[in-house]
Image (cartoon, one colour):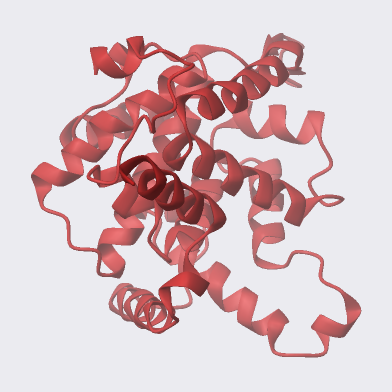
Length: 280
């Protein structure tokens, strides 16, 4: 980890190379389901969701926000160190200038507080890891722990002390056991959850299978949440646990049947071209 934190930001190398567990996880086609799960989970922190809703209109730019988040994960995983630093610097500048108000106390707080950043990070990595494994990505327990250690790189980029970041699945579970006492399904969280399932779509798409198809995907993502999170929302998953796992595996197999050049994202393709050129 020390090597990753001290590597030159000008070096034209990927911070996490093709042999890393992070590349396997973040290149998996189930990352889009995992991303939705992370949003459900992140929304359960009252200060995080208030900071989000008080500083942006997610209804006006839903798809753009999802794309920007996916691009950030792609750059900080598959990009060069320089690209990752530039992307993270933009995120830190945004966090530094934004704040929110607790309506119950009137307290104003910044969105760059370490505990809020850590919650967001842990919700992401827990979702990415749990969903891809449940969908069929074969990772040993040791590889799962290696993934979390690697992801301290991304935590450090946004200003989190890596020493505070769980580096094993056991430590991550302990974090949520302790942190969920501050979690709650506030009206903002419930509104966000409904919006994830029923986002705005072009009128033409509403007349196709896109609308029920996306609602089904949102339901599957919700079903992958830990039991305590589902209980907080007070929503019984429409698909039982066994059915959720089966649906995830079926979706992954379907995605994997698509030719690799078509299903891989632009960041993965760019990284492979860069590595190929370096070895030429």
